[in-house]
Length: 95
Image (tube, rainbow, N blue to C red; front, side):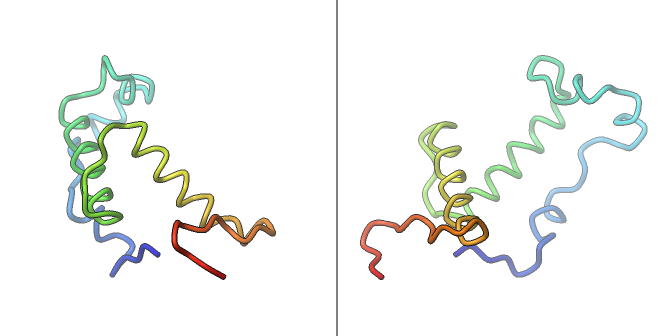
């Protein structure tokens, strides 16, 4: 199970890359479209992704698809009890 010493640990480790004035003057579509995303925001997302990845597993993901599959697997495992399922068992787990 993944745990954090404090829920905001990763967020505080990476301060906001853009000021509020820079953010409010842009449409969300411009801030998050791959072509128009400000470089500062791209770097901040990459740094946060790396920090989260390393918190969840020691080795880097081979590609984005592997990352997505891993995190959706965690979601399925952790959310299954809420929806009446027992959750997926990892290899080697019994019971």
